[in-house]
Image (cartoon, rainbow, N blue to C red; front, side):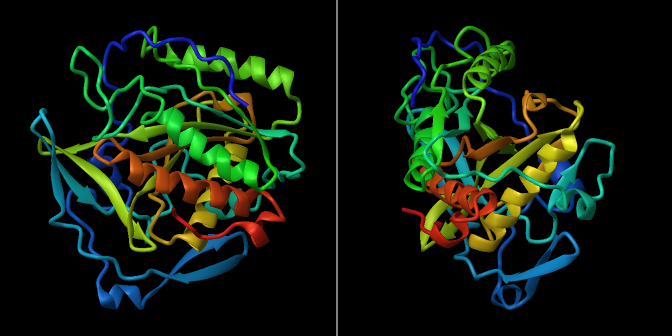
Length: 329
């Protein structure tokens, strides 16, 4: 179900990158250089914690994407692919809290009934974020678009479609919250989410879908992997610590990341755990997902959205563990 969308007014600025590549490197992932999965790495077991137990998966070999690059038409912006998957690091911690991941991973997370009633709210604080092949504003802002076929609304639609196919009712807020002001976008999306949560008491997951921006040495980078031999944007979960109950939200991010690692071992980047709030105080089931980055294409992002939705089914429904399939269309 879509909430009424108002027309977009031009956004003031392009969203600042949430991930600093140097910070990622400090968290254990080298973002300044391409990470190629070699044949020897493919045979090594990668592990992650699931409470007191440890699950094991194998990272498949990937095509060498180090040399893959594209230039945005008319803008002269160079884009290079980059692998930022979380083979060795689950969390990039900038919160100052040093959370005990084993303890938090044992916390209960929401379980969706999947009976068709509204259980998931999807919204977009920065709805007009878009990708390298999308439309641009008339004043020349690249990677921002009011075209809902190529911005975050399209990504939310892809997620909602999979969830609804699995019986999970979705409220999709398609309002452009950054239309009036980028700086006030979180205030706008918060008001909308509060209203929706008051109307639908059965909502258990509140998902804010964005896209990241990664720039190195003057060129945009697109976090990229291959799933079913198709180029697919990599995903990053963002969790904030500046509110009571952050542990529950981090547990949700860890559960979703775990499901992605089980289904698509190179899809997820390390969770970005920061001092932010991101409206996550509204629900113990709050999740922020960065689907790709500005350098990715909309198709790469939509494939990632399908994967994310399948992983949500796996992580938060009992039935989903049998019905969710690792397909990226």
